[in-house]
Length: 298
Image (cartoon, rainbow, N blue to C red; front, side, top):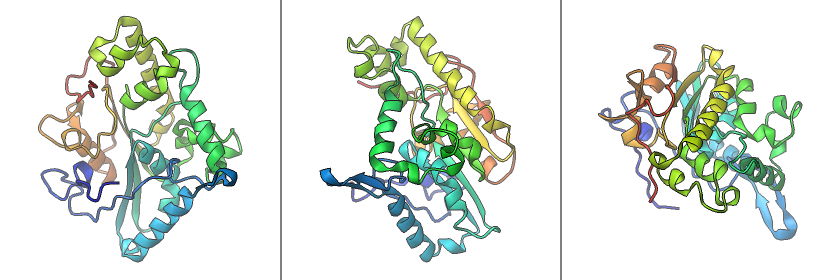
């Protein structure tokens, strides 16, 4: 855990780096519980105790006491595991404030899909099942989902977003770089490494690999189709090989930031948060977007 972290992108305090949010009080909540602040269980024999949900509540209590309760507007955002946390805790966060407070949530790169990997298995579902079971997550997940589905399914955002009552913005790369590496083509599903080149640089993917990734994008579009029909929700799905775009300055707000229909991420999130205009930005499929900041791994 670094002693200091740069506050960039949406967390920046400079108007030229984050024009809509630079003068807000900005807080980053440290994350180390391994279940998006939702665990409340463990394995006592192995001396493993998980308290993510209580850590979340303690952090909120402290922030409220330090003045957050007086906020006229609030935004809960997070990236990756924090993006999932922003979805899981969105309505809970909303309920901390009076009805007169404007409260919304932003999930950046948190749209982890319950997808089939390149070997036909379910790598991410198996990983999530282990987390949910070990950490007793089912106790803290929304009842609206738990009453209809198994607990592991209710840790996947595609089964949660329909039940979030608070306005929510989903920002995600359609070819999420982390999901490509860890969910779709991990070593366990690709023991011979036939995806290694494609995983490290999308330009090296062959045509059947690109087709597999287009199918993944289609699953993502299908997962958000009902969600996007609600006027209070926002969406920015760009056809990039990226992961986490709100806290990086180059992707959030810079001269060459990624665009969908000529509009960048910072402007899109701002338009949605302040109700300037509805935002439902869905990019055309790869390789049409030349504004991407694609992650390339050595």
